[in-house]
Image (cartoon, rainbow, N blue to C red; front, side):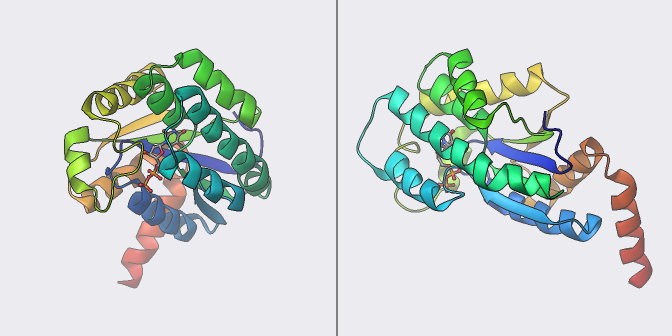
Length: 222
Ligand code: TYD
């Protein structure tokens, strides 16, 4: 766990669960509710180098699973060193669309590499930085796939069994560490999912009093 003054929140889940929308909405709301700086970001591709790595790993030629794992880990190392740690050191709330658990779910679960090895690689890459809270937006991958638009990327094309293993890995990790994880059913309407995310994140980050005050003052103004 980080000893920097900021808060670190990650979102995880399969393709098509709506992570990017919920990251944006939660980020806006946390900024308003706490008055703190909020940095919303993503993996892969949260930096200039990361954009290049994202293109290679998601849209490039086929590669073996170890190469894929190393590219995601390289993106993560640079992202943490150049964006996440500096923001946490400033006292910001960082909300990232995917983090190390995606590597464990996709490269270990999906591609069937060793789970401890893949996790160890990311822990090495990040100097051991784990989120304070990780939100799993859980959805049947068949439903998620139906929500996607455009040409599927390399990972989205990996097949039903791959995506089933990915989901199972996320759920198993969440069940094993309930202090870090919250699991939200992403099949509900968007507003309901976001409301649940806010309640769970506020509780985990000890923001409930700040958040209640913000809600009360909004109600007073109305
Ligand atoms: P995402 O940004 O969610 O894709 P999109 O912009 O299409 O919604 O994620 C990129 C893809 O990379 C996704 O299929 C999951 C995969 N991924 C991994 O396999 N391992 C990782 O460590 C990360 C961060 C992502």
